Amino acid sequence: MDTVIGGGARDCTSSEATDAGIIDCDSPQGTIFVGGQLSEDPKKHTMPFYASSPWFISQGDLKPDDRLSPYNPTEKVKFTPCPGCAAKQTNALTSHLLTEPNMGTTVQGVRRLQINIRVKVDSTGKLIPEGTDLLVPMFWVEQYDSAKNHQVLSLIEFQKKMDNILNLLLALLIVGVVLSLSGFFIFARRYWIIRHDQRGLLKRQGTDESTTVPISRV
Image 1 (cartoon, one colour):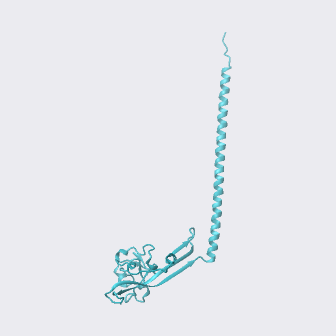
Image 2 (cartoon, helix red, strand yellow):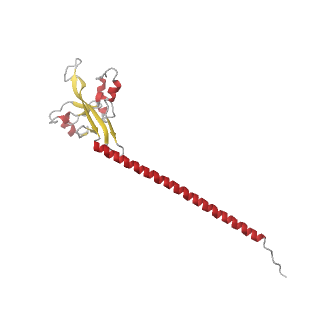
Image 3 (tube, helix red, strand yellow):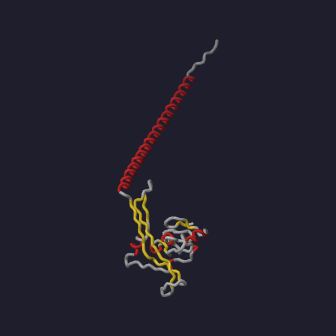
């Protein structure tokens, strides 16, 4: 199974889906077929458009059935960054999503997709049906998202409340520790007093027995 951009499930064992032209079980590695989503009638004709990460940079498996296609587009297309800006360009190729961990609110995010067209060419680059399979990048799609002002204010208020709750829990913990130590100290002192009184009582009983004079009978 595989998720297709725009919805739908990829099931290469289903003849209905493949016959409808919605999916392509022979799509190149690391790509998702989107031609069926862009066509008015996928059953009659589809456009050979495939979505991938920019420059075909791997950001995890886009689909679990890459092994079904032997075609790796990175083997036939080479991207050359501008001199001195390779690291900067590489960072600009990736997608990321930053969220607030407690509420899951999106703080900042960017999604980048590269749209490619699949053609058959010969050694000179001429389009022929019997040519070599080639995936040609056409353009990028970039989507940005960030938290709105009211969302930022809500997050600030929520984090303040969380800080207050944590401070309260810390105060309760300190009070609990103090009460526990006080209880232990009171118990230990009471135990020592009882033991001390018992020892004093035993000593007095021993003294009384030793000073008793026996009375003899006449």
